[in-house]
Length: 231
Image (cartoon, rainbow, N blue to C red; front, side):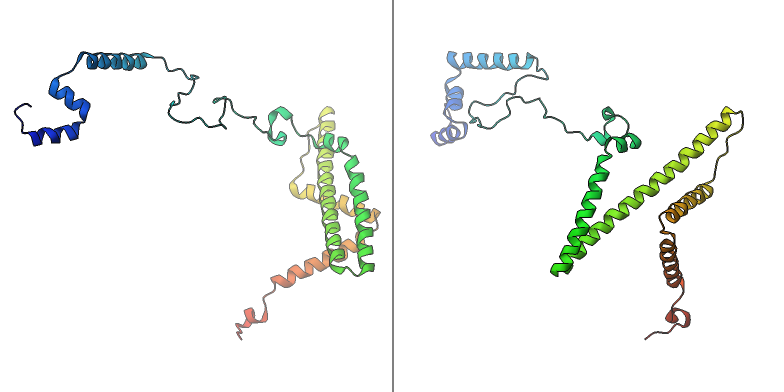
């Protein structure tokens, strides 16, 4: 390197930097050798260290520490769970649920009475839209009650059939299994009996006939479909 021209030496000094240039030009000093040895020892020690799963996270001292940081890195938050889909909450028993929350039916009945009175009051004040919204809410509540009553009736029919088969087997007889059509017919008979008892059978039959007539009218082809008439 001593034989190189001065311009070349200056160029190498700019590329390598002062420390590396002095090391290459003058050779490694005792201090440089000690620094290199200490650096190698640190690297070897770090390499042989056991990196456990729960070891603290190493953060550079040059990076400022945030004020809002998680103190415990590996602890998760409280998990939310829905008791409806959690096995620890047990199996849902509809009959027990109805017995425990029977008071809700009384509250719903009171709410219906209050809504009906409110609808009448809205009619008297001339608030037609508000009265119609209230009556729509009442219709939805009544439809839910009807659906619930029908579901309960179907469950009662299945329970009666199951108990009848148990009695037959206790007497040494073979069980009798009804088809879906037969079970449906039994439910219809029960429904008609209940409607007749409540004096609602005639109204139900008229509404059903009107609904069936509307279905038949929709099935019939129109004049345009029959004769291919187009406007």
